[in-house]
Image (cartoon, rainbow, N blue to C red; front, side, top):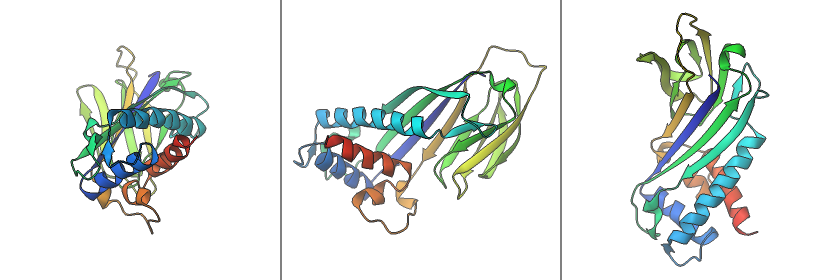
Length: 223
């Protein structure tokens, strides 16, 4: 009721993973055709810093159409160690980004609508706190609303807007320890995500928000 964790996972394989390695090697490394541990560490450090800045400037979650009562408490990145090695290898790469938020007031006291910004067309799983009931899930295609024990959830795919609104109510008959709400968005195959007119290698492998993150990483690496 008093916090939230948003986890975003990306998976790349084939040509997309090669492009990602090439970007890291040329923009943050020494462009020698090999990703070393120090280059991966630099990628990790810059990812955390730039993700924190990005989310601080524009929250991807709102309660009753406002982020005023939400504060960013922590940002974590888990960059795949599979990136280490020759740039040309096409092994699958899985990166995870995690953002933790704190609510100024308990969710139950703030309203009945929570808004999420995600990647259009990607899988999303939203787990609400125990003691809430999900009334509707707007902006989620093929939505399934269900229960995992006493925890309500909704899963499906962000629609073309990349925005979803969960309308919920409180079940006052349920009493339990405060729970943390979790939202997970998973991009299963970036190559299937279409973006109009790629103008750079970054556009081919990062068609959504991570595209902007990597552009910031490139600028930061040159400071």
